[in-house]
Each structure stands twice: as structure tokens, then as C-alpha cells.
Amino acid sequence: MTELLVGPFNRVEGDLEVRLTLADGRVQAAQVNSPMFRGFEQMLLGKDPRDALTITPRICGICSISQSAAAARALAAAAGITAPPQGERVAALIHAVENVSDHLTHFNLFFMPDFTRPAYAGRGWHGRAVDRFTALQGSGLRAAIEARARLMHILGLLAGKWPHTLAIQPGGVTRAPSMRDRLRILATLRAFRGYLETTLFGAPVEAFAALADPAALARWSGGDAGLFLEIAADLGLADLGPGQGRWLSFGAYPRDGGHAFAPGTFAAAPAPLDPSRITEDLSHAWMLGPEAHPARGETRPDEDMRETAYSWCKAPRYGGAVMETGALARQVIDGHPLARALAAAPGAAGVLGRVAGRLLEIARTQLVMEDLATGIDPAARFMDRVAIPAEAEGAGLVEAARGALGHWVRIERGRIAGYQIVAPTTWNFSPRDARGVPGALEAALVGTPVPEGDDTPVAVQHVVRSFDPCMVCTVH
Image 1 (tube, rainbow, N blue to C red):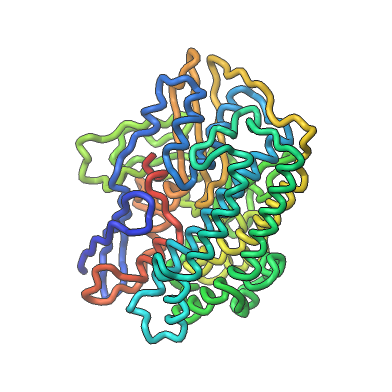
Image 2: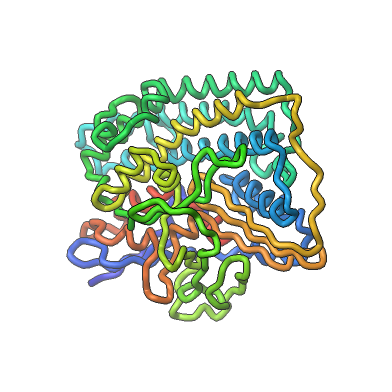
């Protein structure tokens, strides 16, 4: 057996290293290291609870609205209040715009450029991939960036700025949109639908959202999604980077007492979400303290960096089990037939399933955004005043583009006495736990082919990027 250290990975937010044990040209075991410690949870201690609304979005410039939404919901829970329905509706629309923008960025700028590599020269699709996805030059990249910029005009109207908005508050949203704003938002969404239907899918959004099984997905040939599916079939991406068949979602876009995409877990069958079953294991992290629920967790770095650990990332577990989170998990738990069929396939949805789940979610979220915008009532109330208690606890559970994001706050004497964050990439890129069970990515990498002498194996990079990692969120 030999070892190979792969990293840092370009096109990944933050630092990432993966140590591979190789035998017979394949990965036998993997250790995923988040090699940077940032300490946001420590920064929050002793602060006014409302400071979390300003500080936590700075964890990441890609998914800052997700952090805002989680912090606002944690403080709302501590105060025992729920935002007015129209406030929840607009907050959900703001959040959905960011998540769709993230998905579009990942597909076009982070994931697809790997198929332009010279290693794939000679494949029937390589020339088209080069034309569409070459960094800084590809026509597909330019079209995606322009469409993304136009979609984010909605954030200018509703959030004031992006990233790091303060528009989402415990009591709702700070901007009450006018009828003119509503019409402009709907016009922007129509324009974005035009991009999706002419460029990404090459057909009506509803047609892609209605795909019911992997055979129908494989027949899809329209747009850049069709090019990806052609590549996936040629390279066998359905069997690369298999999942473990256990999924988790906190539920996306709360409104009217429910969610646009349901919360829950899935392992052979759907089950209700029970947040009390979440724990964080520290046995292989450079962190000190016992395994605990995040509401009672600590952030104490192990300055000696003991040899049995290999990452700054903790190991979240749900009922002691490794869970995968992300767009595919949301769609599986929400009950979409294509997602359920992909999850039931051999390997429990590998690289193909994760990326197809992201494309499916773009289509379905476009429909959600149109519905949210149509239902805006300018005459309604969008925010209530909220008094944060001097002694309280609360949890804010939301879905970022990359998956389940949770904030847990404890307030004592009017100040933050405890703040813990479990991010999507913390779930997916966790190290081993005390029983030696590998995290989701570590398990998915086992069996990945690595040609002799290749120190940057492209198949490994496909698996890593299929999870769309954000390492700065992982180590906050």
C-alpha cells in the first residue's frame, strides 16, 4: 500500500487536504483534513445576542444569507416568536435566490471545468466541454455568470446587498416590498427562467422537474444539463463516489407553518427529523471536550494537536450514524420520485446523483421562487419587534445550498454564553468518529481509481466536488 496527499483543491472555498491509502490502483481508505482553524464560535462568546446577525454571515461570502437565516431563526426561537407570514415568505425568497445562485456557480465554475482537462482529450464530448466550460473563456460560464448576476438583482431589492445582509431578522425582514418591487421580482424570475430553459435545460423547467426515474434522466439531451449527462454516462459517474444511503435535511424555505422542501431523514424509508439525536464526536478532531449535542457543545482547540486526530472538523452524527446532506438529500426527503430512485440505485447515488440532484433542485426551486414572489402582499406586515430574553436558548435549522445548517445559541445575563454551528460540509467532510466510522466523503472515496504516478487524480476530484465543499463554513 502507498499513501498520497491530495490538496489543496482549487475552486474550493477554504483549505482542504485528503490523505489517500492506495492499493491495486484504487483508494482503500481516506482521511479528510480541514487544515485551517478560524474560531467564529469563540468570537461570539460574551457578545450581545444580536451581534450573531452581523458576525456569523462573515463565516462565508458564498452562503452568507444561509448563516443570516440560521442566526435569525435561533434568536427567534430563543425569544419564542415566529415572524409574520409575509416576513417568512420574503426571507425564504431571499434565501432561495442565494441557494440557486450557489448551485449555478457550482455546476458551471466548480464542477464542469474538470471535464475540459487534457486527460479527456479524444472523448466525443471533450470539444464541447472545452467550448462551454474552460475557465475564464467558456461560453457556458459567461452565460451562467450573467444569468446569476441578473437573478441577484432580487437581493438588491429585498436584502439591500449581498453578501452579509442584515435584512433577515428574528422578527421578519427589514424591507417591505412594494407592488412595483413585486412586479420587478417577477420580471427578473421570468428572465432567469429564460436562461434555464434555453441554456441549462434546453426545455421547460417543468419538464426537467417532472423527470421520474434514472432512465428518463439518462434520455435528457437538452442544454448544458444534457452535456453533463452524456459525460456522466461515458465516464460511469453513477458508480463513482457512492453514498451510504442515509440522508438528512432540516427543511428548506419555511412558510405558512410548513416548508417548500420537507425536513426529515431517510435511510431505506423516510422518518421525521429529531434534532435531539444530533451529536458531535471529537475523537479525531483537534478539539477538546466530550461528545455532545451542539446545544451543549464547546469549541476548545487542541493546541497540542494530538496524533490520533487529523482535522479541525468535528464529526456530526445523527443517532450515531453518518448522514449525507445537500440538494439530493433534500429532494430524497421531500419525496421526489427521481431523487428516491437515484437513492435506491446501487451505490446510493454517487457523483451523478449528487449533481443531478442539484440540477433537479434548480428546476424545482425556480417554481418555488415564482410562487413565493407571486404571493407577496405589499399591504401586509413583514416584521415584528422582538425582545431577546436575558436567559434563553434557541436553535436555527435551515438548508444552505450544500445542505443542513444549524445554529444553537445559549444566552445568559443578556450575553451569548454558548454558540455552536454545524455546517453542511461539517456533516459531509467529517473525520472518523470514536468507533472508527469514516465520514461521508471518506467513505465515498473508497474504491475510486487512481492511476499509478498520478498525484492529482481527476476521479478523486470529481468525487470531492460532487459534494460542493465549503471548508471555511466547516471550521467556521
